[in-house]
Image 1 (cartoon, helix red, strand yellow):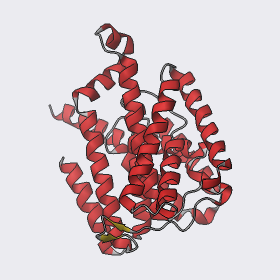
Image 2 (tube, one colour):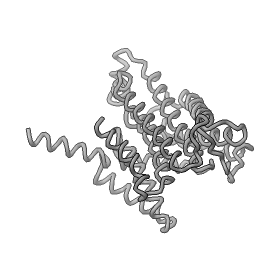
Image 3 (cartoon, one colour):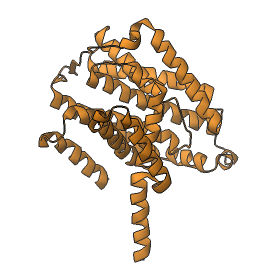
Image 4 (spheres, helix red, strand yellow):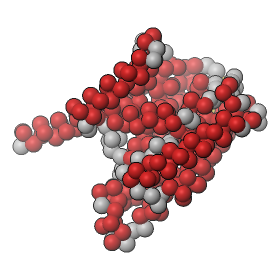
Length: 308
């Protein structure tokens, strides 16, 4: 909890320093929510999804369309995107959750590609042009989201609530059962748990939170495009979790900030950014298998053992 308060205080103070643009921070926080949602599935249930981009993109498209065409205020637009992602997550989960290992991953990838081509052809998404000029509006009729600093603190509040929700899920009896399924599913079944139901619930929760990230991101960027639904986005979130540390609370946040910062500040290198990301990924797999936060925790535990 102390680490959470330090993180919250640091994120609240950063825009006031003028060193980092609020827009970059908002993008990083949206992807941090996405990475934390994905980590809930892979880090605590052991399910590797290669199709999580469909939930991010669905949330973005529905939120953008409902705000621009239906005239929804931002809170209802975000809610619509979140619910749409949760609904698709339920359908995908019912189809994919019975598969194991690589078969589960390939099923989610195939379904994600189907969703991608649906959005490519659907009239309301405007194909490759996407939905542009999404109005940001006033949150609850009080907060003008066109003011960048105001919008930043709204995004920060959404991120902190999502982070605490995931932390609560992980540290609840439900979270303990998810960890038991990850460690030894046959044993969990022998103890009487209907593991498929628990995995489905975790999958839907993860999809819904990914839709929350996509909804907020669409309002931040004022557009929704096919980039967020493409399979490469599913690969990026895997990279974020691996760099930060799978199965850790803070790891996905650190990983998301690192990857988004690379894309932002190394944009001048063009396509070489992908090569640099690949090198970092290889380095993490070979030298830092637990990720940044995972290695820090392991080092702290080793030092504690040494002192004892």
